[in-house]
Figure 1 (cartoon, rainbow, N blue to C red):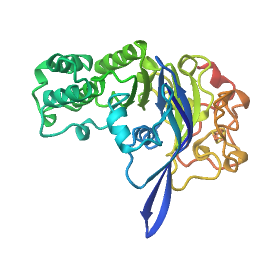
Figure 2 (cartoon, rainbow, N blue to C red):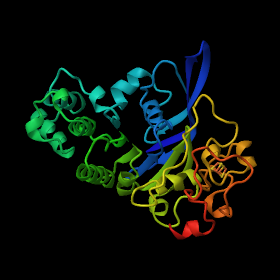
Figure 3 (cartoon, rainbow, N blue to C red):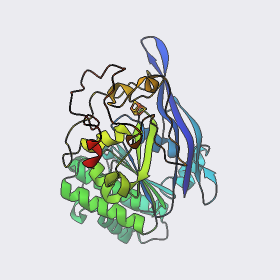
Figure 4 (spheres, protein in one colour):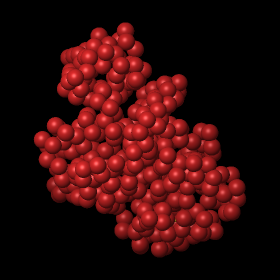
Length: 347
Ligand code: SF4
């Protein structure tokens, strides 16, 4: 369905009277098959949403994009396609977007019914418009008695469901869902996850961008972990969430942060994307870092699935580092690596 290779996005930004390059996405590659969900997970600001915007040509003018993102069916490279192609043949028709900020996505002066009807007319001109509106609303669990409301009359969760309904109108074979469960209560998260999984089981490809690992576990076939603009690990979802668990220390930290697990946050903050270090961007927060980590950039091997780490979980002794300073927020004993081999026993 989709082959992404060496996708990079750079922004030129002016800061303190100087131009700086922000490396929002670097060297990202993955495949997405029909009937498969790949969950792209990671903290806010790691490049997940920028990646989705790049695939749909929705980046601002100061973005520079490199690499390729090919729709396998006909070889169309989304990164090389012009605006007319993206607008007329791709967005909504072949690639549907469930946006991160539905309030900004919906037209504020028109009711949800009106917006859905327009989308049904544009994308499925042969369909019964009335039935199409109701069907799209039902699929996204948007209540029929709210269809005549304006976006400002909706809660955040209902606005999210309205935006989801718009994305589902044309049955696009590839869906990009950018934080589709944001603002929803747990019950609706579960229902939305079940609906997304149903769409995948019906043959669609889904790139699920989320920081909600619980939702990712419910929907995904594979998980890709992003950190500071790079994918640092790709794994089958069953192995990632179950046994043996992820191998990259950041990925393990994400899981440990879940309330249902150790409930221990990853210490520190991600680096600024215009000040990335020469080595591993996670080194300042990583309990397994050694001197080589601060010098050599570790790269993901997508063929062997070796994570972008010099000392992945099953290749080192899990001893805490001694040769570079710990992050100031790091507390002893909070690390998944602090107790040596016993770390693996809890996964
Ligand atoms: S062990 Fe080194 S390379 Fe691996 S995540 Fe930690 S700092 Fe990065």
